[in-house]
Structures are given as C-alpha cells and as structure tokens.
Image (cartoon, rainbow, N blue to C red; front, side, top):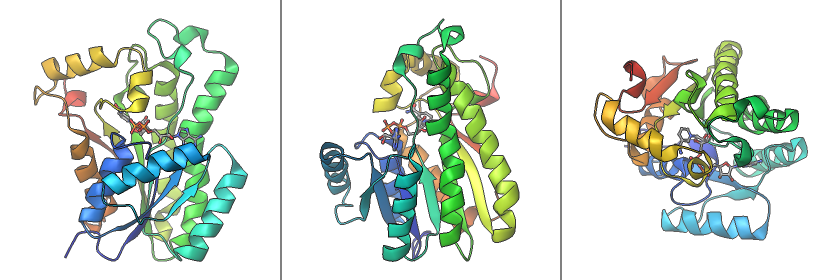
Length: 259
Ligand code: NAD
C-alpha cells in the first residue's frame, strides 16, 4: 500500500524531466497517487510537458493549459478539475518567474517596478490564488506544497528579486496555513537546495551556489532533485498530518550552519 494510495493531486510546474515538479510527480505516483498537471499555454509547451510525462511513465495523466498569472486561466483550470477529477487531496506549486536580466549579482537595487511586481505575482501571489480555488475541491482536507529556496531567508548573490518573492511565498504559506487549518488543509513550503533545472540556469551564480553547498553543507554534497521528490511525498501524505505552516529544508543541512 503506497503512502499516497487513493489520493489525487494537481501539480503545477513540470517543464521537463529536470523539473522539481517532475521528480515530485514521479515519487508521488510511485506511492500510488493519481497526478494531474498543468502546462504553460501553447502547443509547443504542451508537447514538451507531455513528452516529459511520458518519459516518467505518466503519459496518460490529466494535463491542461494554465498561465498562473491569469485569473481566467486559473478559473477555467479549476472548473475543469472539478468536472473531471471531482476532488483534490494535494496541490504542488512549483512555479516561479523573474526577468533573468535582473537575476545577476550586484543588480538588485536596479530592479524596476514592473520586474518586481511580475516576479512577486507569478512566484508568490499565485500560491494564494491557487489555494483559494483548490480548497473548494478539498472537502475532507488536503495538503498544499510550495517550492522555495534559502534566498528567502538570506540575501544570496544573484537571487535578488526572486529571494524577495520566496520570502513572500513562505509567508503566504504560513498565512494560508493559519486560515485553512480549520478545513483540515495543510500548507507547507519545501526549501530545496540548488538543482540544475531550466529556472535555476536563469539565476546568475548557480555554479557558485552548488560549489558552496558542496564545501560547507553538513553533508558535504549537493542534493539530488529526487531527494526533493521524496521529501515532498512526506509533506503531501498523512505521514506529516501534524505539520503545517512549516518551511522544510531539503538542502543537505546548508541552512543550519554558518558558511
Ligand atoms: P523549472 O524551470 O523546471 O520549473 C519552473 C516552472 O514554472 C516551469 O514549468 C514553468 O513553465 C513554470 N512557470 C513559470 N511561469 C509560469 C506561469 N506564468 N504560469 C504557469 N507556469 C509558469 O525549474 P524548477 O527549478 O523545477 O522550479 C520549480 C520551483 O522550484 C520554482 O518555484 C523554483 O523557484 C523552486 N526552486 C528551485 C530550485 C533549483 O535550484 N532549481 C531550488 C529551490 C527552489
């Protein structure tokens, strides 16, 4: 009997087989979950995500377009999920965006208003927008998980406006946890160490982050993206039934020590 047997989850953020969301989905499916997915609108994006799902043996999964910055897209997505899936037991928010031009060390102070607003909207506000729609489909409770990074807690060269967005994301998760707890809906953040994904490559200094982790993290190594997937299963399953409003680090212990 898998840890997520009989549970259905909606996963935002698969772009390819390197995506953290893909690794979460693979581990969740291995534990018996039925996973449904979204992709950025457009045939090309759909094809790319479908190929990634096929390579993860998730080829038959429910897949719908959704640009999370659009309320209309979110409304249409959740209406379709209600119709086709009926209810949800978990939701994974593994989505972030900021103009890469401003993800370079030494450029945070230059962040223009519209770059800041867009990064905060897509990377943080959407957790609120998604949770508010998902709760209707969670009559018996559920688990909502957001992906964060240590740059939420400490200024990290090159992470810039994304660090500010991740602080807002983690805070939003706590506020949602406080409000949705009475509906038995848990909301947590998973703060992952650096993984070589499409998004990570857009952040200046990813190689420096990986090198620093290897030298200073208690485990003296970087994490595997699969380890994020495994920890996510814990947070999505009843194993973590008493855990909400938490930021759980999967970073080889990096956050626990002074570099
Ligand atoms: P990724 O590029 O594989 O995934 C990012 C996803 O965000 C993509 O699927 C992309 O399509 C989606 N996205 C961006 N804008 C969107 C929009 N408007 N509407 C819908 N989807 C949109 O990269 P990843 O590293 O797997 O990132 C997933 C999450 O993990 C992000 O929140 C990221 O900040 C976080 N994270 C990543 C790392 C890392 O080192 N890779 C570390 C900690 C946290």
